[in-house]
Length: 148
Image (tube, rainbow, N blue to C red):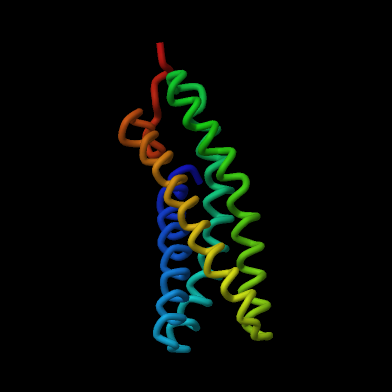
């Protein structure tokens, strides 16, 4: 299950970001097809965010004893944000689902602004994960040796 974290994370990043981008493009161009694409892409992204959190907990257990102190601090921030993001995205997804059935321009504007903020959070979360992988060499597909 540990090896599933990276691909699920990449789906979560791509789907949530593209969902919001499709929504914004649909809003700007007034094309319902882009809004529909954004709706479905974002909702599948919400599911992927939950999968990323769940696989992240498993992945964390497999590496936490093998990290330097600096990497542990980054992992802690990564984990804390990862525990909050699914709830944030579920709220935004619920708002978007509500807007699917009941049109409300003010709430839609709120969704678009919240979507921009949320993809900023996803970008930051991805940066933390990338720092762990590329700077601290945390690998989830290989058995690691304890830090001495």
